[in-house]
Amino acid sequence: MSDVPLAYPVPWRFIRDHAPTYGLKNASLETLRHVSFTLVGPGSLPEHFPMTVGAGETAWLPIAGDDLARATTLIVRWRRDNDDEYLWRVVF
Image (cartoon, rainbow, N blue to C red; front, side, top):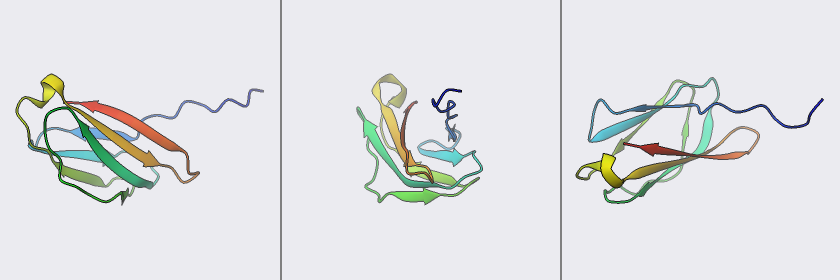
């Protein structure tokens, strides 16, 4: 039997319906800790502290910018209960 862990599905659902406020819903059954966001490219995201997002909860982010889909990426960073760290790139 292999010691390689199974693939971990991305627990987030990106909500674009309320732009310029965007949501990241934790669609998993676990609490995600030390969740933080970084915007790469043109656009602005207010400063924030790392947060905890419980199962089924949504983190709402006000992101300003013109034509974000052209050149902006949101990097989402979080930790699971086992303290493993994950990164996910979101494009608009």
